[in-house]
Amino acid sequence: LYRQKASHTGTLDPLAEGVIIILLGEERFKKYELAGWKKTYEFEIAFGFGTDSYDAMGMIRQNGSENMGLEKNELGRTVAGFIGEYVQKVPLFSATRYQGKRLFVHARSGMEIPDLPEKKGTIYKIELLDLMDANLKDVVLEIIENLNKIVGDFRQDPIIEEWKNFLKKPGITDTKIQIAKVKVVISRGMYVRSLSQDIAKAAGVPGFVTSLTRTGNGMYTKKDCKTLEELFGKNYGRDLFVSTFTRI
Image 1 (tube, rainbow, N blue to C red):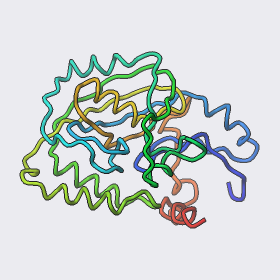
Image 2 (image 1 turned 90 degrees about the vertical axis):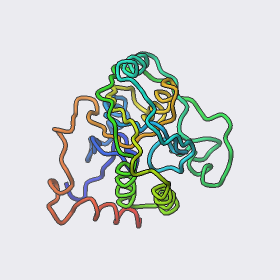
Image 3 (image 1 turned 45 degrees about the vertical axis):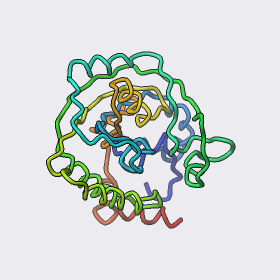
């Protein structure tokens, strides 16, 4: 594995985890062929709030903060309605190019984009796995814990500060919210974060992604994956690789 040229068929958001296909040597020339495979994701949507990034790595933009009273069977029908051809607006904080630059570059500069680019794809399967009640304070504490693990410049400091200030709101300890767990099989290049917004909008409530796992990439699943520690030994884990490549 050492000193071989490598490529990949698609990365993940900083807070996401799951299957990434790494291609070594001559196999890297198959990148665009393999990148077209269907992707399978499991993700969670917290209802009652919205953020500018559509996930926990964003500034709070909508604030309901109370149990939205969603009913599982009804939400399940809403989710199932997304099967088939699907058009979405890409997130403002994304790597999609707009006027020659990545959208997140425009976002950080404060540029307003009234009409975000669209992507077209297919949702092959989608189902609501669960609808759960959760304590809002516990959810926010977990968000802060996960944000503190992120390496790189993703606005973590002001975002963490905003979530910490949110914890100071009166009554947050006793506040309950609803979280939906969804599984989807979707075509390449689509944003689950945008899908979460469309689901929340169809349900009539704000929402954002709190957890995202790519469980499948074409024929490969998490069972087929190896961690960095398994490949290179316990001294070559995620933290070493991330810190090294961040400095390059």
